[in-house]
Length: 407
Image 1: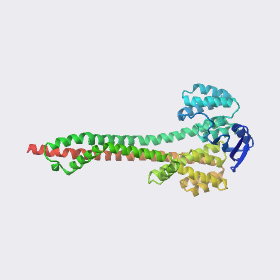
Image 2: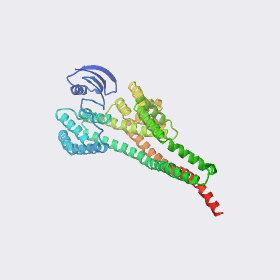
Image 3: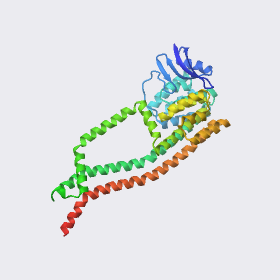
């Protein structure tokens, strides 16, 4: 069969050519023997890219990150103990409770036992990130698979901790907002109509205070239009979800997030830490710089940052330095550019990228803590003012009635 391939050399030169082979796995082994890295392949009835390979297996759900992390920790331990790879996979696949992951590991075990490399076997599943397959490839080539797996585990742990920090910082504000909406909804849909009926016994509504009349009119209008409001909200939500499924629209949204006053710089720092740590992990595993940048571009969560990294990869491939390329991209903080420049000049780029990631992880943690400390009292004050204003407007007529009765 003929395969149209995009390959890269160890020096980072990328080219496209047509190769003839009996199978894709045979083609990969042949290219690896020649010292080439296969980036993408077309032919043989499928279009394949690094980390997203389709080999006719049934579509499966995503593998839980925790289960995948535990598997890699145990795999590294078994390999360090001297167990053969096939035997290690056989032990671990029997201990995996998740059915999705177990089905993938069963297939990986059969492929490795039949002579396929571990990276090819995992890549064939179409479930795992490109950085993982690239790390396995580097580990197999250098004979340090156990160290590479441990380095990947550490990489995932750090990124997971950063995600948990973001979630923790947003949980309490989200709860406050949800409680505020619930209380306001209860007041508008339940309390206001009952008090409005009660006030009608004492004369026309024109005698009510202006704030009370506004609240009653607003409640009446909302209740009458509740069905329409639900339909509009559902339609708007569906439209947003459909729009965000389009890559171009997501790219615009991600670019807009980077331009926000406070959250833009924070998102930029998070992307910088993620990209720096991914690059450091790949470079430490022996992946060429251009390939590492392209994999990092696909691994980052922000599409705008990913597009910028593709431009950086092209400039580095053409002979530019990494610091100069990311400096021209204008996507990363100036401090990160300077630290990368020092790493390039001293020949310790991977170590310096790790330092960049650690630096911005700490800065992001500080920013999130400061954000949480600032937003909580603000939300409490706003929630208190809104609810107090509603209740005061509703109960002001009662105060007047009680004073008239007393008089």
